[in-house]
Length: 85
Image (cartoon, rainbow, N blue to C red; front, side, top):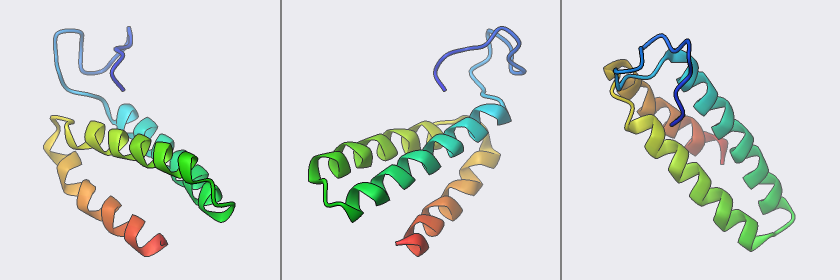
């Protein structure tokens, strides 16, 4: 998430994000993915478009995380999305 917390483990001057931020982004991605699947079921084209844009923004947030461990997880998340559809 872009906002910083008072008790952020990475510190105020650091650009790194905590593992909690990754968990929050993953949870948000799951919620948006669920909403997109529901929108596809009821054929709401505009909602599908906006939810797809939201997923792309979440993916960019995850990919832009400076932690190198996170970059190893991203291909697995993408593969999981392909299997789900």
